[in-house]
Image 1: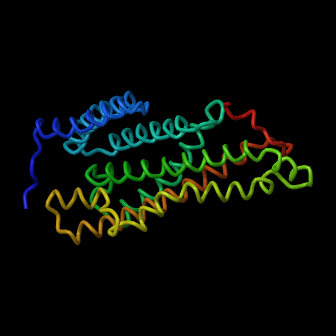
Image 2: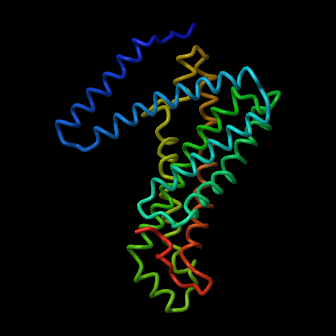
Image 3: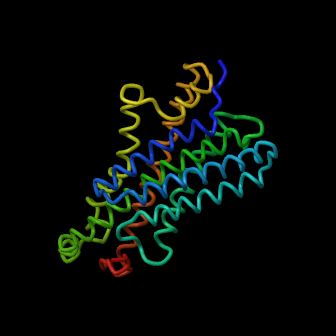
Length: 264
């Protein structure tokens, strides 16, 4: 089975659907028209750019190139984590916690997948490394952002309860333990829902793309199972690390709650 090639006209027809949605949002005064158009433009430009970059990487397989593009992807993901917070940490803490958490979880899980499970030669072949790392970073970024958002929001809402526990002699981490657990669970909900609904409610993107490209359905299914398990591990570990770091940042060395370390 050959993959059907898409023309510029085909993509334009799909773009018209987004334009129609933007017009509808404008008429209904939803306040999302501008964001929708900007997002559509960014999607087009960014994906075309990464397409040319991937073509270069596929033609020039080199560990240095792979390391550079991986670091760039990680830094952008770290920025997105901070940008999505209602009350982000001041300074570079929000960026740093998200970036470090994704590095420790996503990069380690991706490395295991490339060197042990897929075991291609060389292991950093862009055909496997870039898509895998991209999916891992994207999902882990969402989990970490949700976890930190829940942590900081709940800490602000439950400030009096936390301070009351501190007055009773609890340590900072004991005082915030329930909130920390809730935040970790909150960050893992999207990937758990995705795994629970896979094959029944939805056909995941990787599997759909492989089938459209002509791959045997069973092979596409096996790759999708692998990816979802890896994403679950990366998201879970990353969320746990980020929430632990974030909860510690909410207290100083004297175990005082420091919400002034968050932006209002």
